[in-house]
Amino acid sequence: MEKIPIAMPDIDENDIKAVSSCLRSRQIAAGKITEEFEKLLAKEIGVKCCLAVNSGTTALRIALRSLKLSKGSEVIIPDMSFAATAHAVSLEGLIPIFCDIKPDGNIDESLIEKRITPKTKAVLVVHLHGICAKIDMISEICRKNGLFLVEDCAQAFGSNINENMAGSFGDVSAFSLYATKNIATGEGGVVCFNHAEDEGKALRWVNNGRENGEEILSLGDNLRLSNINASLGISQLKKHKKMLNKRKVIAEIYNSEFSRLNSIILPPYSGKYGNAYHHYNLIFKRGVDFNEALEFFGSEGISIKRYYPYTLSECAPFRRKPLKTSGFISKNSFCIPIFSSMKESDAKRVAKAVKDFVRRREK
Ligand SMILES: Cc1ncc(COP(=O)(O)O)c(C=O)c1O
Image: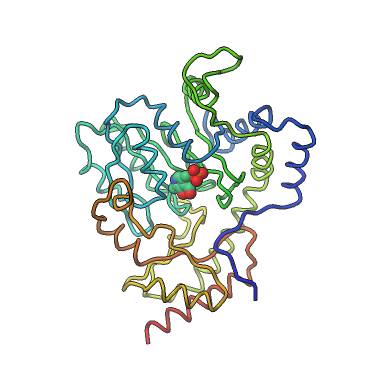
């Protein structure tokens, strides 16, 4: 019995052809294909322009830097995410202020205003697990308090509110294209801007101080995305709706199989706030022993994962006490496999194992 992985990039013959064709062309550094990828992304996400970079962490750092906040400004962030969300804030000389979350994993918008101080300059929202945060309400809080809104969409390519895509709401937003993300280039990231002049400056930061020619206009780094990665990105983008639908099919199997399990909290169904089903997280209301779960699912040939066994406030370099809901969820939830190339029969196998596990614990 083959072990079902927790996640898997969806690579087909078209992806392989796209990358091979780039390799055959010998134009393998950042170039025309990267630029074409940026244009296609901007159109799909619904923003003025995109800048492709070498990781989601870089994208977040560039997004924050583009706001030109003074050092020591405070940025409100959710207490649950990948460490990169908080680290990007600190690495840019800003102070992350942790805000508790809701059971869906996203920042609790009702707590944001309590965290605002005279030093607060921005709110950085993460659409965790692919679930769109209450971004319309958070936009309004930002507008009322004169704060910038930044979106960390690393996990949320394809998530939306009505026709508006995650990534199109913020003053600036960032995506990751890491291997297991909803569209993947191996490593990579994207910054989305609504002002072309912001993109120009950001390009200098990631392109050794250059914009269009060879003149060095400012201090800069090399954080570019290569044509090779971008060719895979274009090919992934062409099929992203199909991939998203396949994730939804898997999620719907789980949703219907688990609808009577009262001891676990399921991810929200897609409603007004879209779910791109990047992860499928189960929260155990009365707690769960993760080692016991690992052993049980391991013996069934199924991978499970606690993506965030820590809260951001707990992790280095912050080392503070976890907040209430994030502290509970970090210890009492885990994700089950979901990816677009997953077979429906495997989803049914996972669902049966989850039900057996839950019933065994209820005895
Ligand atoms: C929410 C979130 N933000 C940022 C990142 C960083 O992206 P990358 O790994 O591409 O640097 C990730 C990656 O997992 C993430 O999940």
